[in-house]
Amino acid sequence: MPHFFISSENINDNFITISDNENYRHLAKSLRIRRGEVLLFIDENQIQYETVVSDIDSSKIVCEIKTSYRSKRDLDFDLYLAQSPLRSDSQLTIMEKATELGVRGVYPVITDNCVLSSAMLSKKQEKWQKVMYEASKQCERAKIPTCFEITTLDEVLKNSFDKIIVFAERSTEQTLKQYLYKNKIQKGEKVLVIIGPEGGFSQREFVFFKERRLPLITLGDLILKADTAVITALGDIIYEYQG
Image 1: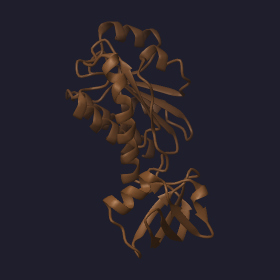
Image 2: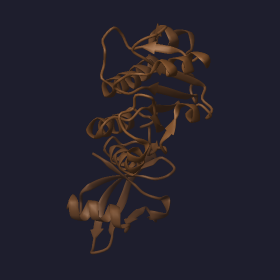
Image 3: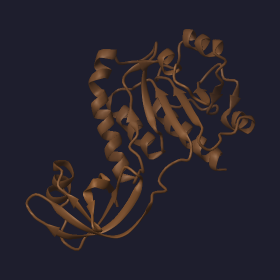
């Protein structure tokens, strides 16, 4: 069951009142919820509420809280993705799946082999953020991840990260398992994953990574499409961390 994001200000005397246009229209008009139905909500403090609809009128929905608890739908380290955007459908899949896999945010980066121009990419940021918002509701994320503004690899690396992992199809040095065996991700760490476009990173970008002594990691002998590589890389990192 999807949950809906609310503010703690919506709560009063064990009842949640939904009157904002977006949630009201979705629940009342699209889902056609009725009295007695169960709804899930989560607030800015990551508190999950299981409720039952007690009243609906033309402007608001009132739900009685039956139980509440802190959400567990979150990683206990901060996972970020810097990725060279793909054409429409593939990129929408990446934003959705990255959200499901727990990323805190996605940096769309312009790379030498990126298929889209910066002007075109800037127009898509709002749509990508909406996809991440909807995916967060569907998979009960405790927090909505951020789609950052279009940027470059150089600008992304000006941010502070505890670990930066570059996945590449050539010039690789080690597997993810080998890297994480020596460099375990710790609780609370900030980890950046970098993945290139369908055409891969350019020779100039490989030099850029090596000059900064960033680890070049392989996902194996198979050549993966960029959207598959994103899902595989993020999933493998979570698996190795939890293992």
